[in-house]
Image (tube, rainbow, N blue to C red):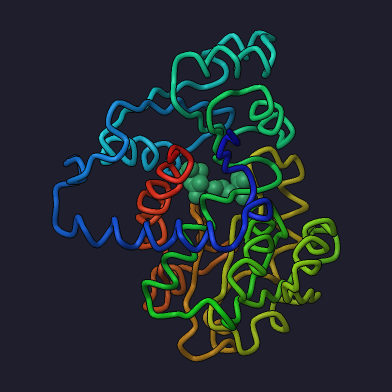
Length: 308
Ligand code: CP
Ligand code: NVA
């Protein structure tokens, strides 16, 4: 039987991704007003345990996956790679084989995307990508859920990404053809998204438009999206901050987008760098719902991974 890994959005058919989002909305609605630690009425993952391995820092991913497993009726075990023999040179493959004997699924946040792929190849349980240098698919499922919750129809919607064409941007590119929205990306040439991602999306008839400025990318956008200018693992912080400064999301930039445009940011945010406080803390910002929806979207991802 094929193991249901959740590594990258481009690998999954759109009907499966649509079903995951539908389930996320339904599960969120079903527990409106409940205490956060109460188990869902159907406890769908009762008896199941998720292992979480972190090679990099995390607030949202760590807490939302842990709470997701609790609400689904299961449990989780968290370790940083430096706590594990992985940090002393045990191989990814051996670690994957051993953990597969203990737990029902593994979530990994890794420095190197290839390590998540190698882990999944060696594992005999589902593996979920909790962010790598190349992508962050769980984040994008939460982002899309948030936009739908706020009344946006994804098919035909116009999303704009400005700043660094990074890992989160790559997953948004992967999602564009799956959900039928267009994505305009404004970055300096040096920080443009990976060609490979753009080619993949365009092969599936995804509409991806690349621009040199933030201003061109946001014109007419329904949604403006930003992320940090310096991602975990980036070594050239000073150069990035200087070169990306003109791509900051300001109130003026938001005015160039549709008057009602929503603002998304995966967090953590750096006010005064990639976004002004007036925008991220203002009425067009959806960032707190976006952060909450990591929990609901991941519950649906976990159910999908563990469904027979
Ligand atoms: N957005 C996100 O993945 O946040 P953390 O790094 O806190 O997990
Ligand atoms: N692009 C950021 C996202 C953090 C959630 C990083 O990789 O650090």
